Amino acid sequence: MSYLVLARKARPQTFDEVVGQRPVVKTLQNSILRDRVAHAILFSGVRGVGKTTLARIMAKAINCENGPAQNPCNTCKSCLAITAGASLDLIEIDGASNRGIQEIRELKEKIRFLPTSSKYKIIIIDEVHMLTTEAFNALLKTLEEPPAHVFFMFATTELHKIPITILSRCQRYELKRVAPVELGRHLRNLAEVDGVQIEQGALDLIVREADGSVRDGLSLLDQVFSFGEKEISTDDVIQVLGLVSREVILKLTRALLENDPGTAFQALDETFSYGMDLKRFTADLLGCFRALILCKIKGCDELLDISQQELALFQELADNHSTQTLHMKLTLLMQGVEEMRYSGQPRLAMETTFLKIIQSDEVVPIATLLSRLDTLLAGGSQQDKSQMGDETSEFVSSIAKKKQPQPPVVDKKTESKQIVETSQQPEIPAGSSVPLASTGQVKTKQEAFEEESPPDDTPSSPPELMNSPDENPAPRIEPHQRSVRRDWMDFITYVRDRSVWMAQDLQRADSVKEQGYELLLEYADPANCTLLRKDDTKKKLTEFVLDFFQKELSLRFVLRDQNSEAAPDGSDSPLKERHLLANDPLVLMTAEIFNGQIGDIRVGPRFR
Ligand SMILES: [Zn+2]
Image (tube, rainbow, N blue to C red; front, side, top):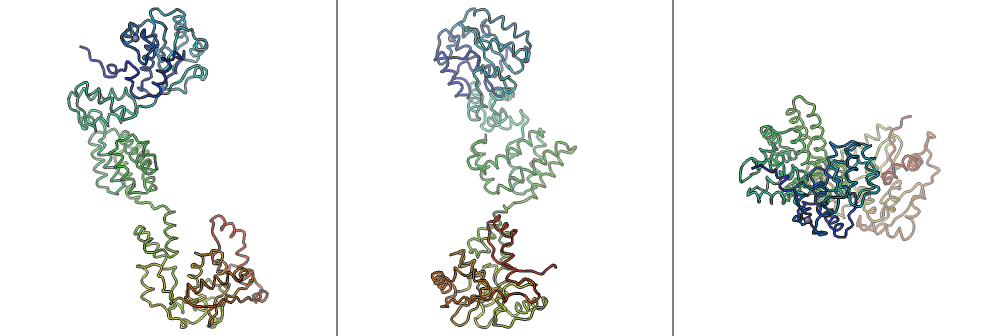
C-alpha cells in the first residue's frame, strides 16, 4: 500500500471543496453557468493557495458531460479521466522546466487539432512567469486569437514577472492567503477523518506556520501525523516542527515590558534549550511587539492573525504601556536582532539587547507632560494632580513651588533689595509707583509690587498655608485675604479666563495701586487702555475686581506723559524699549508659530 500525502489526498475535486477564495470561486462558477468562460485565465497568489487546483476544477467543469453546473460531476468519463490524470485533452505544462520557445511551438502544434474525446482542449501552464521572452511572444499570437476549442489556464506566484501584453489578454484572478480560521477548520476536519485528535493549541501552531498556504498546512500536518500518535498535543507540534513555544515567547514579551530581567533571561534560556531556530525566534518576538502596537491603533487588531485568547492578552499588555514605550522597545529589539545576526555570540548579543530594553523604562509622551504642566501651572486642582504619574507630579509640583507667589516675608524683602542694590538703582520709596520693568535688572512684576508698598496694609496669609505646597501646589487664598498688591497676577489670570483681551490690556499696565477706595491703573501709553476705559468694559472690570478681591474699588486710569519717559543717559526709555521688543518681528513670529501671546516683557542685563 502506497502512502498518499495529505496534500494530494485532500486535493479538492469540486469548487465547494476549495478552502477559502470564495469570491474567486463564485465568479468562476457563474462564468461556467452563463457559458462566459474567458479563453485565457490567469491565477496568481502565494504558494499553496489553490491556483492549479482551481485550474483543474475549471478544466473539469468546462468539459463535464453533465455540465454546465455549479460543480463538475466527477462521475462522467471526462471528469474521471481528468481526476486520474489521464485526459488527452488536458495538457499540463510546468513553466519552470518547459520555458523555451521550442516547447511553446510544440504546444501550438498540439492545439491545432480538435479535442479527441472532450468538448475542449485545456492548457494549464504552471509557474508561467518562468517562460522566456521569446516563449511569451510565441504565445501572444495564440492568445490574441485563441481557437474556439482551446482554453488557457495560467498560474503564477510572481505576477509582476509576466509581460503586460500577456496580462492584458487574460482574465485575472488573485488568490488570497487562506484565513487562519478557515485553514484551521480544514485541517481539523482532515485530522478527524484520519481519526487523529489534535489539541487547539497544536492546530493554531500549524496554522500560524502555514501562513495562509493550504499546501504548507497539509505538509506540516503530515509531518505531525507521521509522529504516529492518535492524540496530538501542542508540545508534540513544538517538538516535531522545531518551534519555540508560544508560551515562552509571550512570557518573554511580558518580562521585557514589565522590566523583569530574571524572567526574560530564563525564557531565553528555555528557547535555547529547545534548540530553537534563532531567526524564527526573533521573528516571533518581533511579531509580538508588532501585535502590541497594532492593539494600540484603533481597529487594527483585526489585522492580527491570532486567537481571541491571545488577542485579549495582547490587549491587556498594550493597555498598560504607552504607544511610545512600545515603539521604543520595538526599535531597540529590531536593532538588537540586526546586531545579533552579525555577532559571533548571538546569545550574549540577545541578552545585552534584553537588558537595554528593560532599562529603557517607560516613556511619557512630551505632549502629555506639557499638558500636565500647563494644568498645574494654571492652578490645577488636586484632582488633576491625582491623574498624573508620581514622578511627573513631583517634578511639576517642584516647578509650581518655584512659580507660585511667595508671601511677603522679611527674607524675600531683603532679597529684593539686594537685587536693587547690585543693579545700582536708587531704592524706591515705599508707596510710590514704580515702572514694572527697568533696564539693568531682572524683576518680576510680583517683586515690583512687593517693593511698591509696605506689607502691613493687609494681613499676610499664615505661613503654614504657604508652606504646604506638597498637599496643594497652588494654594487658593481665601477671597477676603486677597490684596491688589500681592494677587494682581492671579487677578489677571482670573480675568483671562473670562476675557483674554482684557487680561492682556491689564497686563500692559505699568503699575497698579490700591489707594483708598480706588484702584489706580497707570498706563504710559494711552493706547494700551483705550478699550478698558470704555464705560461698559470699565463696569465689567469693576465687577471682576469686586468678585475677585471682594472689595468695592472704583477704577481710575492714570495716563503718564510719554515724552517724559526718556532715560537720562539718552538711551531708550524702558517703556519705549518694551514697545520695541513687543513689536520685534522675531517676537511676533515666535508668538505666531507657537500660537502664543506676549504675557510679560522683562528687560535683562545689557550686553553693550
Ligand atoms: Zn463530469
